[in-house]
Image (tube, rainbow, N blue to C red; front, side, top):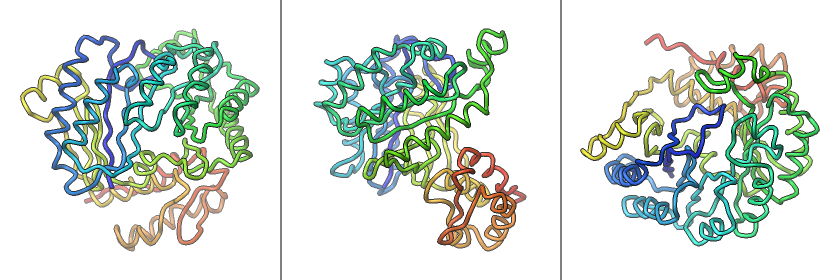
Length: 377
């Protein structure tokens, strides 16, 4: 099974923390959509005989698209690939786009899962991050969406300067009271060359506190565990039966095809990415040329990728798989490198799988980096 990711590189305005590829000008939207459809056609043989299980509209802000435009792209996938009978088709959406009429309209389409970028129910937080919606719109769209979609995920951000633990818990409680069964939650990160980095340097916004983020992460774990959510990946929580198939496939190393400017693809042995420029992307696709760069992963690269993704999940890193796919040398190296973290009770081994403890979850990315092997080939 494989997935297709479709990058929609348009936004109404720039969030201060975002370093994803997007444009606030919609002038090239029609050309871009035509190019997405053409790229879907051009790459129809890349996944070989793999059946498509998930289609994911990310961005940017995919909810800016008209339903007719969304349908054109979905139809192109169905026309060029074999798709399972009941695929998971997700649309990332912002609350200000999800009016009552838009939600009703989307419910008539093949979209069967919404990922709503709420981030916070506090106007102060939303203004600090320069989000396009307000708290009232966040509450309203969430209430309305649950009437038409059973499968909804909500995004929340913690570690925002000025976000109290009381308000953070309130954000969580609002989502839980709505009956939502999937939550994706991320620490606010200061990415290079973003407006947030500039505003912090100028002293206009307080520094992001790692200690605050860690404390609010553990509040999140505690509150969601009370409501029977499974922490299946570092940033993803769901009730039974509500795991995102798209997210799970990514973290379990399954293949996926990325369509659109800046979109990444992965087939287990090769990583590739499209050019990060709308005009150049469109120009190249119009000539039926793929504006893409590819990187063949060495055995060590594949091992490092597996360790990084595995430690973020409840499935962990299979010691048997490490031996089978990478060799005994890698198995021995992993055990030696992980020994100090097991002694510190940040990692543990269960059923021949290396996993993070509750205490080690927040640190999993840093731990996995220390378990990486240098490629000396």
